[in-house]
Image 1 (tube, rainbow, N blue to C red):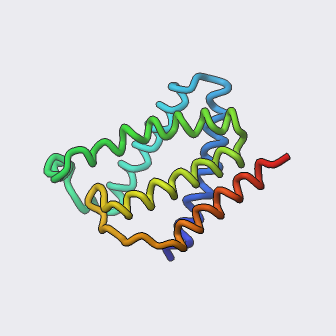
Image 2: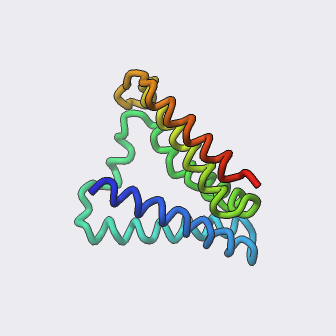
Length: 143
């Protein structure tokens, strides 16, 4: 089930990047990003009410590592950077670089056990996989 959800996530991110870039071309980048975040807030609040409100809003103030609450602010910059990269590189190239950066950073987080994530041991096959991804990018970009 996790694979299906990840595939849906990747597809939605790709389409969202194109949609947000289209809105930006007719408005401005920060207006577009604001609208994206506002509509995301509305959907999340509705989903929270519909699913039974498993936790109260007060639970946010009891988070152990307060820096974890910066994820929402990061979302605004994620929206901005996706829009700018799709606009300058095109959807396929932008998403290819975005996903590669996500993978490299995520593996680094696991490798060093950052932000409370369980530390994993280094594996050569994962490094080879990263090299193959980078080779794929070069192949994809090659004219």
